[in-house]
Amino acid sequence: MNKVCSLVIFLLLLSCNSKKEESKSKVLNKENKELSIEFSLKTNVEDVFRINLRDIYVDEFQNKSISTFEKIPATSNFESMKAKFKEGNFSKNIVIKLGDNNEKVVDLEHISFSYKNKVIEIDSKNFDTYMAFNKYVRRDSVDLNKFYISKIDNTNFNPVIYAKQSLISELL
Image (tube, rainbow, N blue to C red):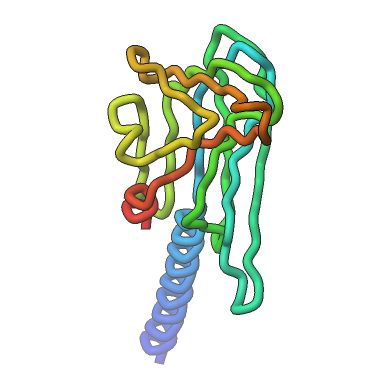
């Protein structure tokens, strides 16, 4: 009888322990589903830089957008901007806005995207594979890390670089 009770208690403890391990692995999986974006840059003019996730599906009637921003000072050293977006906030429309109002020169050292267990590092060598930019951004032909941000005919000013479908596909 004593052996039977001991065996039952042992099995109960073992099953409780395995349930704890299962719940730990679920938490780890949730953490891996966060989208993390980091980029390192320097600029000659202080401005506000933004990371935008656009058209995030909510339900059949709604989409949402999320924006995070940071004022980056004019500096000769590289500054980092990091953003983490919780699970359920992945977008196929990822945009990095390179300032609000000012013409400037931006040296972009790297951009890093991580989602689930994948990390994609973007630098001057693979920038064209994963990223593109609009008409307010011009890339230097010699120093591929350097971007010139300028207004065109005093029109609305919206300098952005954005993720290509190749980046989105690799992250998913």
